[in-house]
Length: 287
Ligand code: PAF
Image (cartoon, rainbow, N blue to C red; front, top):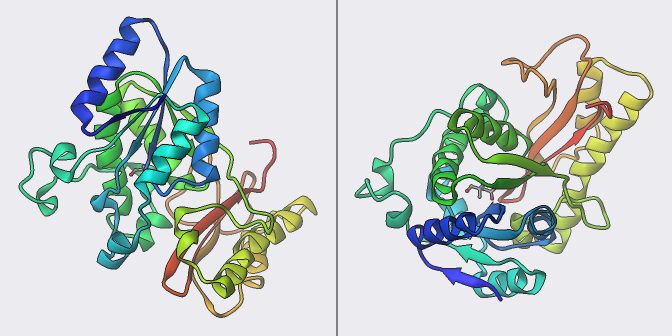
């Protein structure tokens, strides 16, 4: 049976009690509006740990557009039901004040430096986003303490940032899980709920573009420009593309590499109408 806790202090206490019972804890941080992608993380956490908890908090610090924050889908009762059904043990949330008690308002919260993996891509196109992610995730890690924390690879750059954060904190162990896609290849995202039927169809071009770069890579191409071009060619005009890029995930160079690339992940961010989507695909199967 799912235990629902309304504030982080109670979650800290719950986690402490589990550790006193020598139980390992899996932790899945979320912003709610749960879909199969989140549930796959929870399942993975359940498989690998004695107990599992999740957080649901729509973090205002990571939205660089006010409308995006207010329009972000919220479905708390359904979220609780889904977590209960799959066997999650505890979920917690909290108010802005609970998460950032030192600040009178959200604008007053001091943002953490998200580190070197925040350079470019999301760091460039969503100023302040990764700072906001890093700031809230550090709090969530401190609330839950030493555990295993689960993140989806769809937010690839976020996984690099939180890994770095966890390394600096000394905990938790970061586990990443592969992107869950629908039958058309579209990466599952809470934001997909905001798309109309025609926008959903348009959005499937994002994964098609990634798979075209993968096909080119598999044919032996290592030229960054050609890999980028293969993606651009598959992103029709109504999509407003922020980036369609390749990066070396090992060193995450500050500037997109020119010339050839030996280890690569392809990453796309594009707006479909008002909704901004991101996706990525590992090109190099040796990684
Ligand atoms: O990936 C997300 O849903 C969010 O960025 C996270 C990690 C829960 C922080 O708010």
